[in-house]
Length: 483
Ligand code: FRU
Image (cartoon, rainbow, N blue to C red):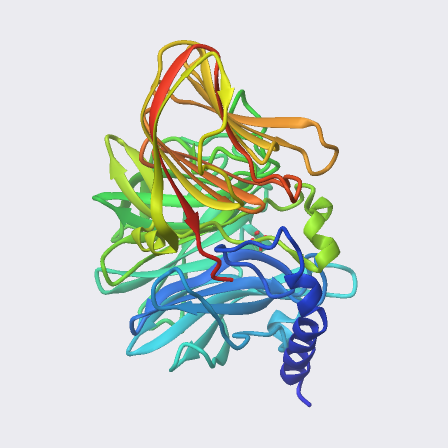
């Protein structure tokens, strides 16, 4: 049996062996992408190819920890219902033996081209990285072409996560990098034929204006046009917490500016975090056939108490965010759950016109483990208003401080922890609860907060409170279980 066949066989055996344990977990999600067993991290190769959406993912099927990753694969016609496909890539060759790491997909001549990083470590732990290509006719079976881009001078071997696109008749690739003086950077490559790639310099980086001191490594870069501006998304490592910003172990965010495809240069502004919650990293976007810029993020952060998640007892770990549509409105990025997700709604909405006055209450028909809450026309005249989910997570808006807070009971030690973001005025909140995950979209997605949380299994409560007069209109839907 070849190494590839062996790795596939043992991954499928792991699924089968642990299926009932995995599925019996009350914290298993109902409508978010999860691994069938083991650990999932970054979204990879997100593309709509010949009409079908494909989302590949970093997958360690043999344990709930990181290691020599495979590319797992889900496909979907509607971004709501997903089919777990055959394994796309296993780390079976010398140039990827310690992991088929993150990368992207493009369509060319009717074929799907997947670019990814071959991670290699020798006996002494020294790292090598190769940017590799694998080509597929059907989006399912891949033909590996091996390394196509090599490590240029000036960088360490922390060089990974190629994202490829075409512009003005040329191919471009951005790669997450670390320079030899240990600064995070995004490297640019160009190609005429997708096989031969030339290094074209550093596109953006720590130690370069305007970022200045900005960490020791950038992962998962993604450069794209959003309504006329060039957005560069990346995940920097090594930033110090700064007030409400950069509270997680590592960050994920973006800068905007102008990419000169002739010169291979990028003028850009300051960094903004994409998500202000606890669990969001390594997002990747694609442009779909409707012309929408869609994003999936990994709902976790590397090295952030990963081994303390209770789902480990059920042999699985981590999930994706919901698919989000990106738009640029009123000078800022908005992220909203894709419209297709309305298909999850079961039956009619429960509606309430709610006025709170220094009280804490539940509302008829408003409870559940897998729900969507749409709160609009929010008016918090003074003081604060909050929504508590399952007695464990709480969204709180303080009118006086103009701050939106997401709190949860830590799954490590039960203490209450929080993440915060300035929101001068809160008009709407769209909240997706899915047993052990919460995604909060404030003000039509101008501000997003994402987290895993672990309420007690019986607790389906949703409780609304205020310190003074507050009112809003509420729609609530139960959401279907599609996983
Ligand atoms: C980000 C990351 C990538 C790497 C992959 C390995 O979470 O560290 O840089 O390609 O995960 O699984």
